[in-house]
Length: 488
DNA sequence: AAAAAAT
Image 1 (cartoon, rainbow, N blue to C red):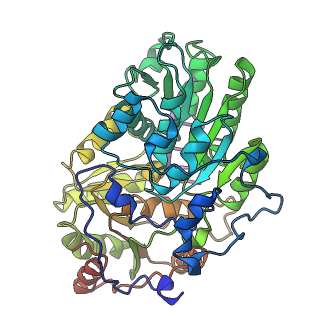
Image 2 (image 1 turned 135 degrees about the vertical axis):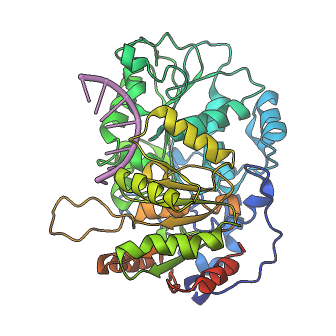
């Protein structure tokens, strides 16, 4: 148990370094620790037996009303290979020759049988950042769609434009040989709302989008016919169902689909489900299979987390420029998270004035600007990206090795007098932008106020991880911990 | 506060 709590100690790395060329490769899956997964079929028990000390049996079913994992006692067999799933030859070709996958990751092995086989039960699935959730629902959509029927049959709802685009790329790649086409709210006609151009009728089988535009396509434009939709995916589902997120939009969308057509399989995927959202989802989604991860098991060990206590707010930028960047520049790409749009612009400007090449992204930019910033970052043309939480979730870029919480993630407090609470879910999603698919990563938390320090302590308790401190004024220390993280 | 999207 002790080693679990000491993120600072250096473990000997016996595994070969994961290659960076593939987006997702099988060798990476071997390093992803999903030992906290509550799995449902006997075969999967083998996966967790080899780490018995990390399993607290039954403690995952936290809300008391939850008794069963598999609705209706439907038996499922874990998928050892993609062949076990009765997929079309075209889809297998996409998985092997286009995606370069070899076999399902653990979350894929556990959920794909539930997704692709009758009775197409609803599913609520939690799995670690970078463990292959996207493949689960993309494969689910592709396998259940009839390419000959020129009408939407699967919908994927995402919280940001960037995630919509990313998911569409994955669908297009994986479905390359299937003849299945996609429509997405982010591509083409980005300015259509300005000219109130009506979206033409959608003949694509898979539709990916943000809630607002999807809703407009369904109601106002009458372009999205949902009568044949049989799969409804919520990516980052906890945010899509959170009262403070997209709950209203999501539930309305779901209701409208159910009214127009028959029964529709609902798939919820996220790395995080707060207790509140979890119980809401369990109550709301009928007869769902589910997989959850204990929060103490959720923080990936491949991502080394550190705190740097800075003397003043003003000194944070110097720590970034003088200490972190010199050490980080050789490593790969970095994302610097700030709290507000304004802070993103200001930090961007300030860094650029000092000769640091970087870009920034936040919701206040135009779609064209956002697309350009992401395109440059994807291409590796920029190494440092400053972002608000628009990029906190889902964004998958293998080269990101370093995440900096320039501003600590906090929940919005309605009362001016109350202390800000740490945003546990956002924290985990942010640091999860590094360490994709078992790759190594590091996260630095820049702290100034007592509130910052208190919030970090709460994060440590929540995820049961010690987050060691690194001296703010010593670049050698930062170099050293990056080495310890396996990055230097 | 940020986010999507629309007003």
